[in-house]
Image 1 (cartoon, rainbow, N blue to C red):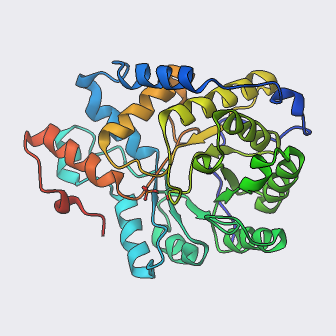
Image 2: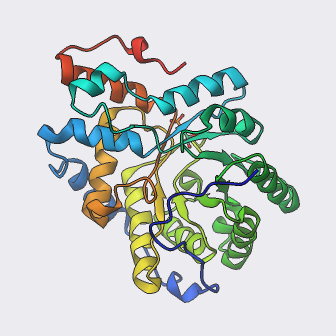
Amino acid sequence: MKAHAMPDSHPRNPGTPFAPDWFEEMQVNRTAAERRATTISGSRSVKKDHQAAWLLRAIQCIDLTTLSGDDTPGKVRRLCAKARQPVRPDLLEAMGVGDIGLTTGAVCVYPTMVPHAVAALQGSGIPVASVATGFPAGLTPLSQRLAEITYAVEAGASEIDIVITREHVLLGNWQALYDEVAAMRAACGEAHMKAILATGELGTLTNVYRASMVAMQAGSDFIKTSTGKETENATLPVSLTMLRALRDYGERTGYRIGFKPAGGLRAAKDALAWLALMKEELGQPWLRPDLFRIGASTLLGDIERQLEHHVTGRYASADHHALS
Ligand SMILES: O=C[C@H](O)COP(=O)(O)O
C-alpha cells in the first residue's frame, strides 16, 4: 500500500552529517526557560475574541491518538469517525465554518491498529500516524525496531512516531543517537518521521536541546516531546528549548522542522498556550498541520465543549463530548 505523505509545501529535511559542534557548547538555563515560558502562557498573543478561531486551528493540528493496551478495531474506527468530524456540524454552522471540511491533523495508533485506521479514513485525506520502534521505552534490538517501522509503513501509515534510546542521551553518546535515528529515517522512506525525545527522561534542558539537534541532523521531519507515558510529559519550558533548537537548525540549514508537543495536553487552554508559544517563538506561519501537531487523546473533547459554550453560552457535561 502506498503511503500518502503530508502536504509538501516546504522541502523535506534531508538531515546533515553528524555535527557535534552545533550543540556541544550549548547550555540551557532552566530558570530563564521557565521565566520565558511563564511570560508566554500569560501573554495575550491569542486574543480572547479570537479564541474560537484558534481552537478550530488547534483541532486541525491534533494528532488524535489512542495508544492503550485495550485498543480494538472498533475503538479505532470510532476515533477515526471523530477525526473526520471533530465538532458537531450544528456548532460549525453557527460559527459560519460549516463548509471548511474541518478534520484533525492525523490519527495516531499502535502498529497493529494501522490497517483499521487506514480503512476507516479512506477518502478523507487524513493521514495515519503509527508509533513504532518499541514505543514507549524503545528498548528492543535495533533490527526489530526498524522492522516495526517497515511493518507500519507497509500497513499504510504515512507518518511514523519513533522513540529514541534515552541511554544515548544520558551517557552523552551522541554519535550512537545520530546513527540510530538516521537508520530509522531510512526505514521510514516516504513516510514522515517524528522523533519522540521523551524529554521527561532526559534529565536536563541542555540534554533536550542537544537531543533535538541530533534528531534533526539525522533527518527527523518533526521533533516531539513525549510518548504520553513518561511521568513528566509536554511542558512549556521543554517545548521552548526544543523550539530554540529547531530555530537554530533552520538558521543553519534553511530547513523547517515540525514540532509536536504530546502527553498531558487535555484542556482547551493547553492548546491555546502551545499555539501562543509557537506564534511567539516562530510566527503565525508555523501554525499549520505540516509544521505543528498536538498529540492528544482527550483534548478534543474539551475543545468541543468550549466551542459549544462559545456558540450557546452554556457548557454541556464533560461526558457529552466523550470520544468513544
Ligand atoms: O502522542 C500522544 C500521547 O500519547 C497522548 O497523550 P495523552 O493521552 O496524555 O493525551
